[in-house]
Each structure stands twice: as structure tokens, then as C-alpha cells.
Amino acid sequence: MALSGRTAIVTGSNSGIGLGVAEALAAAGADIVLNSFTDRDEDHALAEALGQRHKVSARYIKADMSQGADCRALIAAAGGCDILVNNAGIQHVAPVEDFPVEKWDQILAINLTSAFHTSAAALPGMRARGWGRIVNIASAHGLTASPYKSAYIAAKHGVVGLTKTVALEAAGQGVTCNAICPGYVLTPLVEAQIPDQMKAHKMDRETVIREVMLLRQPSRQFATVEQVGGTVVYLCSAAADQVTGTTISVDGGWTAL
Image: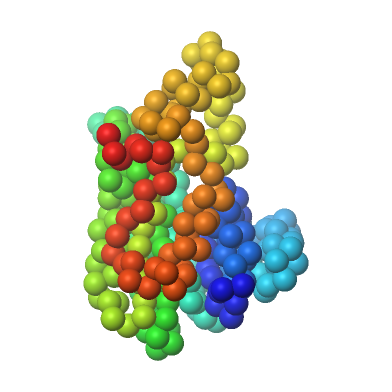
């Protein structure tokens, strides 16, 4: 239980990568704050079950990551933040000339600006305690690009730049800041896309995964939420005390191409 006594806030964490990261941190002993923009009974039940499963404190706090005030209020409401995982994100696909302005603004707000607000709110407490970890979930698209994803790619490149800046400002104070850059991760959202891709390409499941969805991922295998969660736990460990201001790719070789 290496992270016992630490409080971890994971944004966008009632499903997918965020929930997997929260699970890994709880298994390592951290108390958990789950977050999303909803406030349903099942959100709170999810946190309660997570806490019981790992015998840690776990709460759910609603906060809309498109709103700067909500981002900062999340940190305050948690009452302490030793580990901050900026995971919240959305996607929209369209050519630049047709990209809806409101979608551009929303993606930049949730995928990038929220990490600025939460980090700014969490850093003073981390500095005061002499220990802190900020882990930004970027993307392979924080290091490379694809067509029709201009807002997402701009935001994720921005996350990588923000990561480096925060790391430099916090260097030597016991606080590190790093970005994880996953390729395709098998989340419920991605899983739901597979039948449509099978139908569109007239392929079986394994072929459409290998030849269409993972075409740019040389391993031809999805990363898992457990692998991303394990990478976060590593970055929070003593072994990573001098790992800061960098990116770790969990992308099956995508960015090696």
C-alpha cells in the first residue's frame, strides 16, 4: 500500500481510463476522489464500491471540467490533493473548415484548460507538503497528428507543453508533473464502436480491430486501462522521484513510426 495516506483526484473518472486509473491508485492504497459532470446515485455508488473493494476512502464530487470555477472548486472540495490525474476529455471529428466553433471551444476547455485550472489550484498545497504528483493523460495525438481531429490534437499537444512548464516550475520542491500518451485503449466507448466498424468494413471483429482501428498501432493490440493505471502508479512511486516534465507513451509503438 505504497500510497497509503495520499489523496488522489482523478478527473473524468466514472468510466473508461479515468476509472481504471482510480482503481489502480486505490489498489496502491490512495484515497480516491472520482469526478464527472453528472451527479447521479450511481456515481456515488461507484465511489462507495471502489472504496470498499480496496479498503480506502473514496468519494464522488461533481464538477464540470468545461468551467474553470468548477475545476478549482473540485480541488477545494476534496480538502487535499496529493495526486492529481487530469484525465477528462472529449472528442469530435470534422475537417478544419467544417469544425463547429462551439465544439472547438468545448474540447479546448475540457481537454486542456481544465488541467491548467486544477493544477493551479492543487500546486500550492503540494508545495506546502513537499510532495505531489500531477499526471496528465494526454494521447499519442499529443505527439503526432491525424486528419479531422484538429481540436483534440491541438489540446493534447497543449497538455504536453503545459506538463513541461509545470514540471519546471515545481522542480526541486518534491512535486513532479508528467504526461502519459496512450494510443488506442480498449474502453467501453471504444468497444461500442467495434460493431459499427465491422458493419462498415464488412470485416469480422479481429480483422477490423487489427486492420482498421489499430492500423497505426504497430503492436496491433489495444492498450488496457490497467496498463495506463499501472503507469500512473509508477509515476507516483519513489522510483519516479526524478521523472518529471516528460511523456510516457503507452501506444504499442505508434509514435515510434
